Length: 297
Image (cartoon, rainbow, N blue to C red; front, side, top):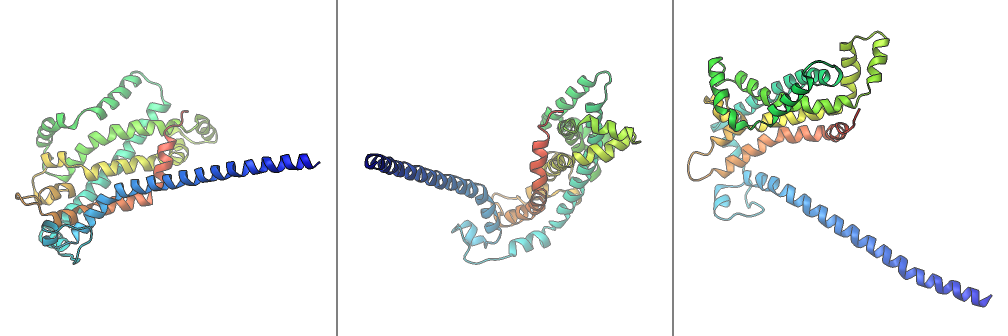
């Protein structure tokens, strides 16, 4: 009996160091994970922090003694931007363009994607490839043709023309993405709804679109972000100050060899606020939408 007890105690004694080493390894692994995550967060947020801090600095602190924390906080850069440069007008133009492109693009691409997923007709595969080809076409190849076309249509140097041009690039992407989300909706749900008296259009509105809401929200955010941040097409197609968008107005702040970093960072901060608010509100829909599109029907 004593020998059995002694053997059990010896086994327990050997097990204790092993369990302690496992806990230490888990603790070290957790610490290293938090260090890596903290480093990633700092790497991502530091440009945002530098942009915000620079917008609150005096010129002498920006050019002569750059530091991570300003000695004197000032809103002079924002005053110059809003009063002297009238930056609220480009913000308003960007709002108009981005919201119009997003609403029109999601509306049209919803019907287009639904027809590609649910209906059978000739050349459907070819149409799908053309949609993808239109999305993959480099924007730089279309500057001259689009500018000539907008001039002939009388839409040059206008927000209407800019919205129309942005739709040429956002519609293929929205249609291509929404096809994946609509495939995740079971066809049987639509058939059951039509048995209960719904038309095909009613099934789309009452069944498919509500079930695809996270995907539609994700596509809307992608479309809005692209229209809000786009610079090259706006630079080519618009010339008047009254129709400049926010990225274009920021570009025209650079007028000499010395960059006005204060107003530039203030403008970048103001331009980032709508997108930050949008992504913060729709964060849950973004995650759901990106995962929903991977489901195969």
